[in-house]
Image (cartoon, rainbow, N blue to C red; front, top):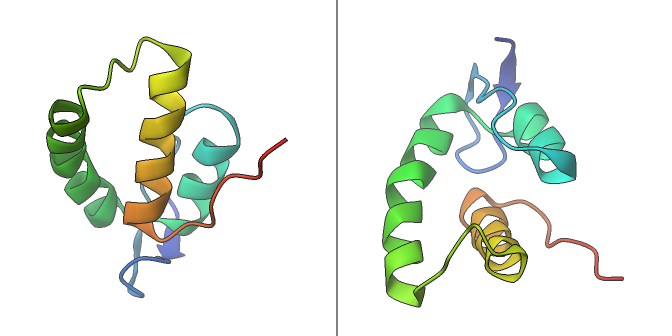
Length: 80
């Protein structure tokens, strides 16, 4: 995978690659390193459990994407 300058940690490292579909996947592929993505995967489990999210449901998945954006330092999703 290509190197990226990570928006979260500021380091230039191997990118996370295409880890999610849609525009959030595009942003992560272009702006997040593999190490920060790995850290998010560990944190994501805690977020899902704490908030009782069910990622199979669209509404909960969108909330999880919001938490993902916040953790990784990405801009909030555009509403509308």
